Image (cartoon, rainbow, N blue to C red):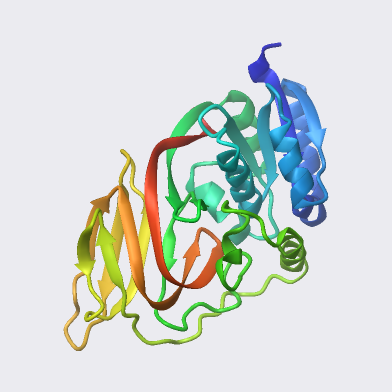
Length: 289
């Protein structure tokens, strides 16, 4: 059996609590097709230790989007993303908990996802890395002032601690574990608190797309392929609708009065400035052929 067939299956504790049957099915399918070493971490520290000590085994994360983000963050901080290729079997308390994995192309369902781990092929994907070394796999969303509510998908936060799972240092790992447990016990619908337009300066590769004198309704930044990010700014409109401003860039900076943003499922802020750089084909994910 080759090194490629040797798997380290890291099962997130939230997945074990919320859907033990899917976890069991995934273990059975993976065990039937490869040499499997199962790891059952009980804390973020144990999760990190398991990945760091993976050796030549191919890491497989069984869990929700938060577990996937944590794994990518660990490998990024270890500067191992170039060599390690991740696989994921999405298991979460609700469809929203695995939305990121689905959007990346991972199959839905324990059997299909586990088979993709065994039969799929690695695909290199772009990554956003911010100026605090936090990683973003999907998108960054900046809503209007006051529009970030406590019911947003994923763990909320205040200050920069909200980005701890995705990279940039886990300053409150036990808080993350408690928040994950709360998600499993009570899944609440998203709540958006009404707010007014934001005044932000958005720069793409040093070119100002919108300045502080132009209120905006929202900003989104996401990997766009070929080493570029797709940036979209929605100016506030009074009467006639204003077309969004779009750009492609390798570096995006947003600054202005205190603002919050959502990177993947994690809410961060308030901050006054944040810069995201695109890392082309920075990480690998096994997807169906």
